[in-house]
Length: 186
Image (tube, rainbow, N blue to C red; front, side):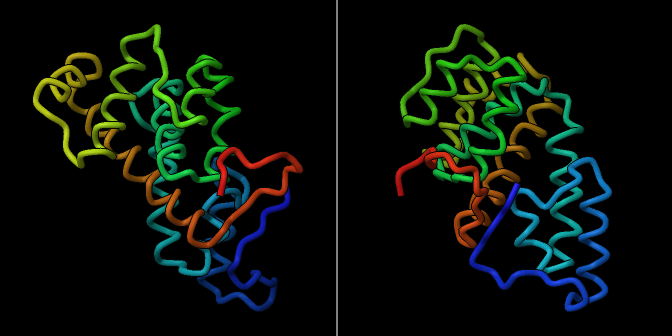
């Protein structure tokens, strides 16, 4: 998949040793590509080192079911209207079992109708967090009862990490050349 951005393209032989090391780490890790924010982050090897490790945990290591973490990611992508984040995670969310109606509602900036209480809770936490920058006691307790405290901490980490991803993708105009219409109007 061809990826572009407004950053200076990385050129073999013109990268610093740290940039090359980080690039190699990313390409040899579970992702295996520079899709998403990594194209930008490699320009700052120290940021890339830390962010890619956090991202690997948020994507592959939390106690949350993939369906729920992908819901958190799509909620974030929709809130930030992050084109590439949506393009990358929408097919993953579908294959993880998130309903088409939920995905379509998020993309259209509408409140989804959920059939599962855990999905409703993840959405409510993300929506409330982004809208008010806080979570009230009742919603917090609902999350802890459904997921437990460690997974609740991880869920907030997923929202935070993917907000960083969305900001990176938006600011540096990282795009996947898919030949399809962008998910969000610009």
